[in-house]
Image (cartoon, rainbow, N blue to C red):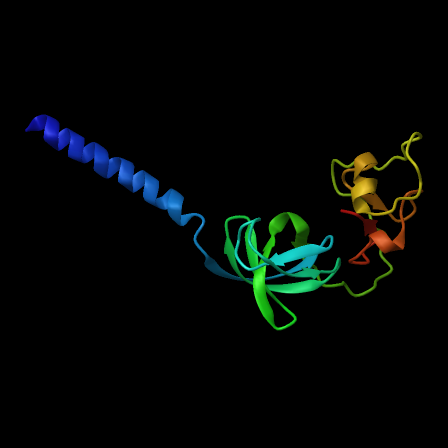
Length: 155
């Protein structure tokens, strides 16, 4: 009888541990705005093998209505679908222009790397040499990489 009770308690404990892990990937409502970082496939379901509904162009602002694991549910061209979080970044509204001096974030190496090119196709290339981005006045700074117009590119 004692072994049966212990077995039953062990099953209950394992069930209690397993249930939250399953719920972690359930869809949960959220409200956020993101921007695509590349052309991204909007899929019918939150899995990489799901049917592609449409390819959303780079730098497209999207409203997020739900999250499931590493997937966001978004609306684009009057359709709902799922995009992977690796292909979007949090949308930050442009700030009002001011004449303040922009300083580097703490613990960022902003000195020019002598072996680095001064022109980069995109932020992914720039971050290979300057992981924290670069400020206005740096040889590698380009306005096209400063989406929020705060004087700091690819932050």
